[in-house]
Structure formats: structure tokens, C-alpha cells
Image 1: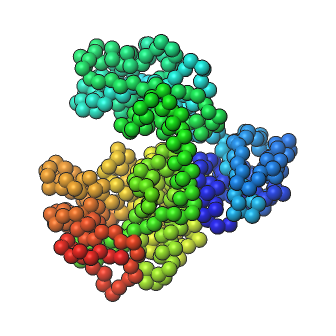
Image 2 (image 1 turned 135 degrees about the horizontal axis):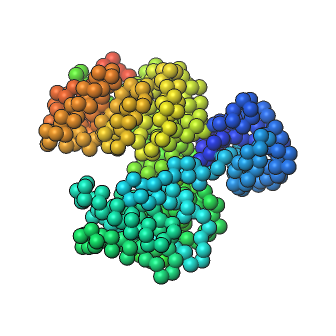
Image 3 (image 1 turned 90 degrees about the horizontal axis):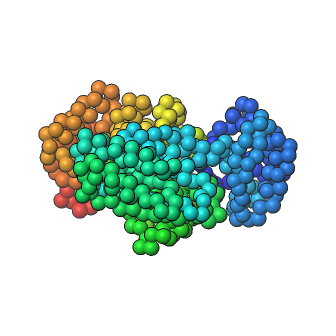
Length: 520
């Protein structure tokens, strides 16, 4: 089956197992937690009656045989032969020769989020995921989601902010509101009924703390289900809350905000899925340069969308947890470019999201693609991004080492930009780290920050890890990162990204600022 077709089928998957089944119930493809399903046996070649209990198998087959081309159904609750309850969703793609694509999860998205549920340390309220898991349950007719934003909290000194957040948490907890939580650094949410106002509770807490002049903005969002499944509802709520509490543009008629955001989410998701599945995006290749010699060490593959902002598309894919399909599509393009040049291909790096690395089914798809092309390993580098939090660091490291043991080089992207960077460096065995460009752009402006950079570089030297400085755009950036001991540099000072991956030459040297040509 073509990878682009499989991408479309699995683009919305957030499951423990992905599999494909023929109309007679034979499993023809599977990836993910297979051994947990069939008592240690590979699933491919088994039939659905060896997976599901007899009564549920007949239901499953009726769904499979009843799906028209392009049809989807589920998730439906079925029981495995071993007795476990699972949720199964199915779709039949026109280009898949009658085979039905299925996802299987033990507890769906709500269970996955509930597993990471808990309390927010500063307020004592439910944390974001725990709160949204509760909000996703069916609402009463008079219930609404209230989201309160106190943007200026971010400007307070840390000790003062801690005190105020504690007061806000206590006030909300004592207000009689049953379901509440912290949804962002400066945002709070609650399910409220007619006559209840979360904003009033927060304002009083601020006033009691001597900060009554801080601006408080409240948004009320409809909780109508609109026929969504619980998983779809959870994703839409996460996206809606992020958009409202994250400084995004909110529709003027706030009473219709949720419905509009859900519709927008669905349309964007369908568009992104089709763009990814059909490969309707391009790659640009920017050289990464050895600072001592000026020669190109390798290139980074950067994504370019014709009809949308690339960063927005990537963030949207992360928010709906469909970045795994995007990662796979990028890998297909990069490997294709390397294969096309053969021995003349330079080495190329591409990004893998933390979500893909830490989700067994998603990583299984990508790892399968890479391991089938392990002859290209010496030409391919993988940069792990910090856009999605990785909770099981040990399992993620084991997955990463599977690729490194096959010869692929791997490293951490945007190091220093997020709170988890040093935690990841401690947990993962990697070949390189790329220091976040925000630190490089300000190099030379603060002795304290410069000393921190030097310490990072020195630590990586001791661990035998290469360091890459990105956003090297000016000559003084180049001189300073070289003096600090960085191994490699990337940025417009050397070259902009070009649309073509250039073949190897005897000695490839990056152009310096003042020369307008760029590689590719």
C-alpha cells in the first residue's frame, strides 16, 4: 500500500495499535502494541476472530464489510479475546483496494490524558489535562466553559506570582465551583452555571493580594457536543482553550466561539491531512557548517507550505496530535531526495516531534520506514523537537537508541528553549544538540547568558556531543560561537535555504555574508 494512502488513514490516530484488515477479516498490516493484543504473536496473518471475542468479532466484520469507499465509523467499544475493552475506529480509503484502516486504543484520548492528570503545583487546582478530561464529559444545558485570562501575571516577580497564584487557587476552590483548573501560565478555567462568574472570584483574589488593578478577561464558551465523539470533543476543547487563553484571535461573538473554533478545527485538520497525505508541501535545504573549516557538514530539511505559514501548520498538527503523520511524510520526502542522489548525496537532518518519539504506534511507523532504508543511515540525522512533552523518558530513549544502533545519528533540536532541555539531555544518549536560535541571536549582549552558553558547550564537549549554533546571521555571531567552541553553525551568514539538495562536491564550502548566492 502506498505510504501516502496510509498517512491519510492514520493521520488522526492517537492509538495503541494501527492495523489494516481485508473484508474477510485477515490482518494485512499492523504496527504498535501488537504483542499486547495477541499474546505475543505478530498480528499480520491472523484473522479478526483471533483478536476479538466472537460476538464482538461479528460486529467488527459487519462494520468492515459495510463501509463504503471514503467511509468512516467509530470509535466503537469492542472486547478482545483476553477480555479487555478497546475502542476501535475504521475508515476505508478509495486508494486502498478495499482494505480497511483501523485504530485501536485501550482507553482513547481521554484515558491517555487522565493518566497524566493531577494537580497544578502553584494553584492546587487541576492541571490543564486533568481539567479538560473532566470538561469533555457531556454537559448540562445550563453549563458553559469559563476561561479567565490575567495576562499581566507573567510580568510579576516569581515570588509574588507564586503567592498570587496560590490565592487564586484557594479562592476558586472555596467558591463552590465543582470543576475548575489552570489552563495556561496566566489562564484559569471552570464549568459554570447560570449566575456564576469565574472572573469575579479571580478579581477578588487579586484584590485581596493587593493586585486589584490587574486586568481580568473572561470568555464564556458553549459546551454543546455537536455530535462529536469524546475524543474529538477533547481535541476541540484543547484547541479552543489554547486559542482563547494563549493570546490568539477570538471571534467577536464570544457566545459562538466554541462552535466556530470546532468548525475551523475540523476544516483545518482535513486540509492538513490532505496536504500531508498527498505530499503537497516542499522541502528547502539549509547547510550546517563546520566552523573551523567553513565546509558543509550536512543540511537541514526545512518544510515549506505554499498556502499557509509553516510554523502555524506545525503547531496545529501538534495541538491535534497528528504530527506523527507529518513527521512520516517529511521522512518520506527526505529519504527520497537522498536516494535520488545516491553516493553523491550529502547528509541531511529532519525533525521528529517528541510526540512521535514517545507514542509507540507513531514511532513504529517511522522507525519501520527508516530501518527498511538503513543503508542510508550514514546520510540521515534526526533532530528531536521539544514541541510536545515526553513523559516516559526511558522508553523514549530506548526507541531513539533503536535508530542510533542502526547507524542513524540523532540529537536534540532547540536546546535551551524549553524547561525540559536538560532533562532530555540527561535521559537521552544523543550525537548532537542544536542550541536554540533565541540564545544565539542575543550572544554578546549579556555576560551571564554568554557564560551559560559556554557552560553548555563545555558540558557537551565532555559528553562527546557535537554542538550546533543556529540563527548565525551576522559576522559577530559567527566569531563568538566559534570562540565559544561550537562545532557547527547554521544561519543566513553562511547561506539561506535552497529548494534543491545539492550533490556532494570535492569540498563544499558555505558562502559567507556579502556573497548573494545560496546553495541549491
